[in-house]
Amino acid sequence: MNDCCAPKAKEPRRYDLAVVGAGSAGFSAAITAAEQGAHVALIGSGAIGGTCVNIGCVPSKALIRAAETLHNARAAARFAGVSAHAEIHDWRSTVRQKNELVAGLRQAKYADLLPAYNNIIYHEGPAKLVAAGVDVGGARLSAERIIIATGARPGVPTIAGIESVPCLTSTTALELEELPSSLIVIGGGYIGAELAQMFARAGVRVTLVCRSRLLPEAEPEISAALTGYFADEGVEVVSGVAYRSICKTEAGVALSLVHDGREAIIEADKVLNAAGRTPNTEDLGLAELAVTQTPKGAIVVDDRMRTSRPGIYAAGDVTGRDEFVYMAAYGAKLAARNALNGDSLAYDNSAMPAIVFTDPQVASVGYTERAARAAGHKTRVSTIPLDQVPRALAARDTRGLIKLVADADSDKLLGAHILAPEGADSIQTAAMAIRSGLTVRDVAETIFPYLTTVEGLKLAALAFDKEVSKLSCCAG
Image (cartoon, rainbow, N blue to C red):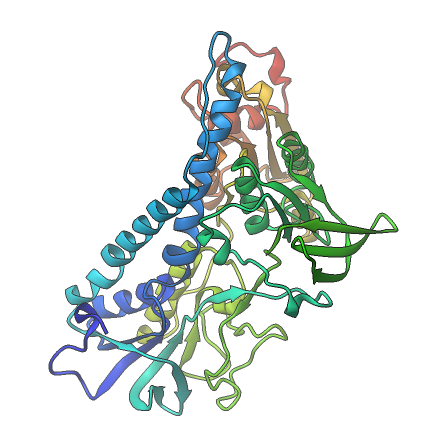
């Protein structure tokens, strides 16, 4: 155990709250409770900091950005008179630099925080919930309330033979110090999409396969457009497949599937499993305490973050919903406040922004058109291509679109969906508009800075009632 994480003197015999899991959600819950004066037991097993800093957001985005510089150099010729060159000459160094970033953030944002909170005691070891407390490595911790924040890990798709194939995961793929020549990516969600493009830009021949379509939760227009952009970069997307089997070969792996009614075999050096995640709930003793779980193992919680067992709460990826680090931290903060103060706060994801760090980036908030209709809304929709946004024209990169969904009766903005190279930094404006209950007209009449991607939201709002191609710059 590191000195920074060692139990402090005068450890209380009982805790007001025990938090199982020392990732983003766990730390959020523990700090929130400590700031209210509660004595907290924070229980971790494995690397402190959890998924995001160690094996998820931080390392993946660092390598995605590195690969993006290669693409930008190749695309420089879109500007007349400009040429550029970039290449990977030592991927091992790139990965090790990423590891240094991870180690630094893990220390600064997690381990080094513990000494600042005298009423948080860190315990290392596997945890099992028991009546009125938690067992940690054989030691009993007594706690009045418990929050489970143990996160999730890569799941295993149901494909015959997959147990005998050395699949890469989103964790191990980011640790590769030598790039394969070819790669099969199984799964068309955000992890599969991001890593497929990253490896392709690094020079790997990539085939992405998925049961549905690329980014099945996104608007269909965005999915279709991004599939085309992937093809332009050499990433083959094979969607709507039924898996048959997978096996090792002398050269690597072979995946057998059915696509468009025909059987096919795809071969590559390596395969990356990005087909979903599994909550970390094994060995917690949930069944003995009658804590209800979904068929996939996620812990069921209500809008107050309460499980079916009084006094036990859960937050983050272990609940199987809204698997974003900021939503894990948000849910854990609510859980801590509710556990200590009477369950008065409700979880609200109605204005939750979601980002996929492909290029172009996919950013969304609120309802999709289909979801809005399913919720009973009569909808109006506005969609503009990025060639109507001056920023994209100036950047000579018009890949993408912006789609807004509004309630036809009230004119309130219900959803915003952006596919753009700088889309991630624009979606928060739409999130705040939805949270504030603004109408499409409110957005259209708001002053936006010229030559920005976020100005596209204003143009899309105007496009509900106007032909924006006939407007002058900054008109409307």
